Length: 569
Image 1 (cartoon, one colour):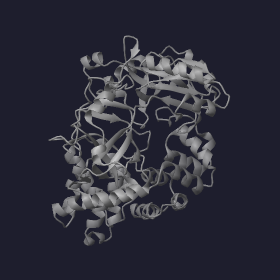
Image 2: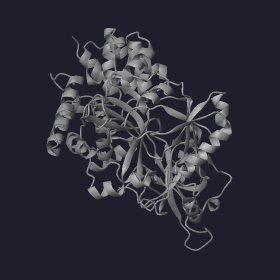
Image 3: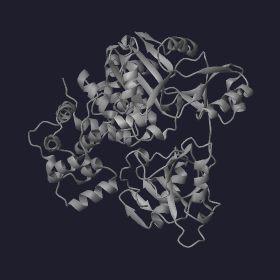
Image 4: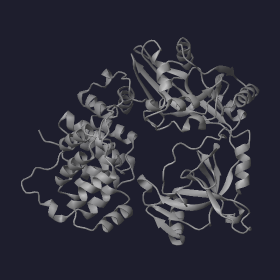
């Protein structure tokens, strides 16, 4: 039986990265997966193509930093430290830098066998099994010592850091698996939803056993999403005569809770686990009878009322929470959907039935009222606002739960603050297909009237969404020409371009010189018609922050501000 090698993997993924066409990527990977002979190699190839060292349901981590990789591989190179670091910056990542700098004499491996995907998996197992940094460095060095070709070294690093940058998304991988084994894409997608790991689904597809897939708890299911509606009238038009259920839209952390016996896991919308940040939520769920999969929101909660989101923001990412922190910043989970209960998968059942099952569980649940006209929606919206919530989510009671989809079964109406005109102060290279473009922009407002002495721009946020590829290309050319300085991937630029920025909230922040940060900022449009002096002032930000429409107002500071590339800009 032929063993899959890392060089073969690198060649196929380089070809996939070289094309922008999804169908071409799909065929390249499908042909590759279909030719792999062993089930174990198939699992590894699919997993690594997704940029994961371990299966999605495997909670192990490599615990390998860029510093460890650099310390391990630099002695294998024939270059200076300065050139090494400059190459990382210019190529955008360690993997591509290693490929550029890989010594030609390392290609002469003599009789040594080529590095295989199984070898890679063995190294990953060893890395996950030790917390000793020196041991990790030695394991990493041993792995790279076996790399003969530059692209082997590149992909070993890419997989370690979980970023292949091939432009291959999960949907393309699923389609590639379906094509490789001549199976319907919907059957593959359904199996992934239930099993969680595409690498395991690939093996089921090869064996013709996709129908045997059943739900496994403790892998996050994609969340069902709501489509934004600007007004109640817009929502009524979308509802097309159907009555919907209106729930108050909570400002918290969208969370999915898996419970089997005493084992509990909490996943966020980013598919990350967050149990350690919310032991009080875990304790409350422990008392639930049976095994369940719940969808809902973790919110700050005190005296029978949901509090501003900033009250629990500082708990995020912490592994150790003091008794005082839990007391001062209490949190609860409010459930609004039940997806699984005691072996019964409910995804395809109508929301009405899922809510009936949810009502029988002894936990906090969202309340819903039926609405069928704009007046009823406006009334429910006003009540949500009085309760300090963001707005409404409108749900078709006959709708199934559609993971990862944003259709017309769920709608949302949120409070939006007025936009701000801000000046770009820095531009950063993006990621993936934008890694060579200045696509991420830091923006600021004036701390006083710009005509006054000492007037300065103070940052209030950073955004990357809302601009076209053509506009990004124009910005990239412009900012590289006018930049006043560069630190790594970030270019400091003089005040020249004004952006109209939309956002959901304004929060206090120690990270920015303005003292504020915009939450969920996005670029509404580029204001070529405005000069930098026309941008908003800090007193306007102060005014919006204090507004009753701003649910982010609080005196709680940001959670553990960490140094970033933007500090001091």
